[in-house]
Length: 477
Ligand SMILES: *Cc1c(COP(=O)(O)O)cnc(C)c1O
Image (tube, rainbow, N blue to C red):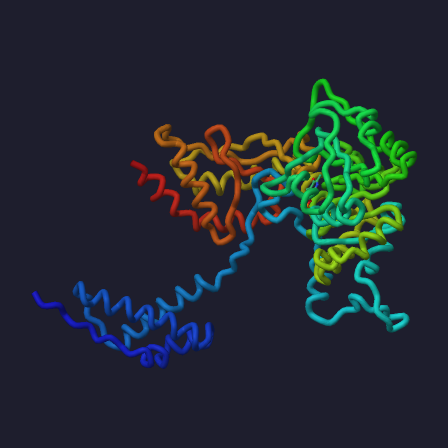
């Protein structure tokens, strides 16, 4: 049998055709040319091996242009995708931690659009310091003497250790040698910062005399680290910042308190469990306090070093500061975020992180009731949908064992067979939506905790695009 030959258009014909011109206008000549060439190569290879349905050159050119457009569109889609965080973890490190306040978004956009007096004193016309932009605000809010800002809290710790303890010893309790996430391990950071770690006490108990005994001529500082993602419980003893401060003063050593999340407000006022604030740490006598910008503070990624002026100035002068400084975009966002703290009453309405954390349970339940129907219709007879109790977490190491009662929706496979794979398929289908929806699988169900669902309409409207579930789940052997 002879193969019917298909008239294959030239690259030029495709580019000059009506559909081709539209693609060029959208993606540019170079990218379109590259994709059209590849599509034509594919077509040639295909026509050598199989008979293709007959089509005119013009139609083939249009088909090739359409294929090129599809490829270019897929290439062009942003890699950093917006998602709906229905995991129940409000500050989810893998999902970008804090959602910023509108005020912060506006300020960051303005800083991107036009030149800004970042390191320029408008009063005198001379060079300024970028951290001056927020120093006053930070000191006003925390009661600190001085402040310096860096890329994140890991940088803050690196900078503090390298500035105050280079070539000398830093004393840390064994109960506080934390690992957070993949590669942030306190001992590793200390080694890279050029300070020797002097571990004291035991995992569960460290006494004041352990600190006293360890202090010697090589000691440069005492470091206290918030055990962000675990609790040491049972037969335990740790030495508080206030007790350590007395010792540090007596021995003329700086005391550094790494708070991790670092909140500026008393969370108990908002019905959450109280977490030690930055002000508490300073009042307890810490000379320097370090904390993150994108955890409980609810701002952009940043690291704060606040406290005694001479120590803060020394950090600011360290050449490493330049390597870990903040950019204008985040400084703008941070300034706007911090300003919101001047009005604590309105904070839950304006700061998304606090808004999510304080969202009333009734409100979340009511939302679950609204969304249940549309979701159940989408699931058809494949999954049962039920409103369920959830326990949200703050995340990012704030109040590690604290959970907040919440509500959500649980999707359970009707057929017991292969239910694990059905759940994985369903979770995958939600992840492939235009705005991926991320939940978690728990006790044989895919669970969406609705605490952070502020885009309800989007969630519901997208459900119709989830048709893939049916074919995938049914295709299970
Ligand atoms: C989160 C955390 C860090 C790291 O902060 P990043 O801002 O993520 O760099 C350091 N120390 C503690 C105690 C933390 O909780």
